[in-house]
Image 1: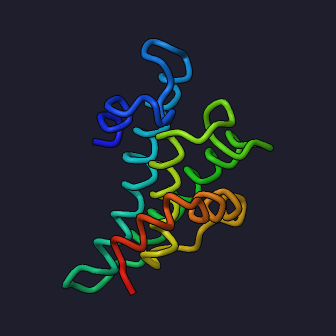
Image 2: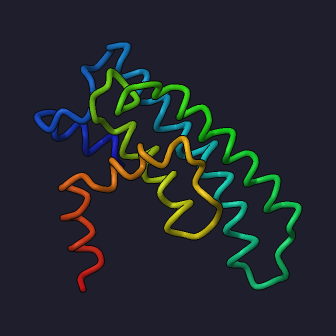
Length: 137
């Protein structure tokens, strides 16, 4: 849905031009976030939030998988603020949301190398406005 919304609102500048290398990277990061990173977090969530007794081995293995994905994000960022072309995009929305879910869902510790990235994304004014609507005081 987010890719569709970005395509429907090109003036927002959240997705690169069709056929560009940057768009391919944005797709790559979106799917990486939704599969590799979020998949590991969902394995943890099923253990912690399920009705049965949590299997610590599953949690530990999933946390290790999540940490490995966070290391990939950290390495890709280097000294940049954002994942693709150092410009905020759908890639950051997806990956940042998944990383943030680890913290807000209290699923696992957020690796320190990606904390500044997640903090920066969570501080964006548009995210703050969205939270105010989704979670009114």
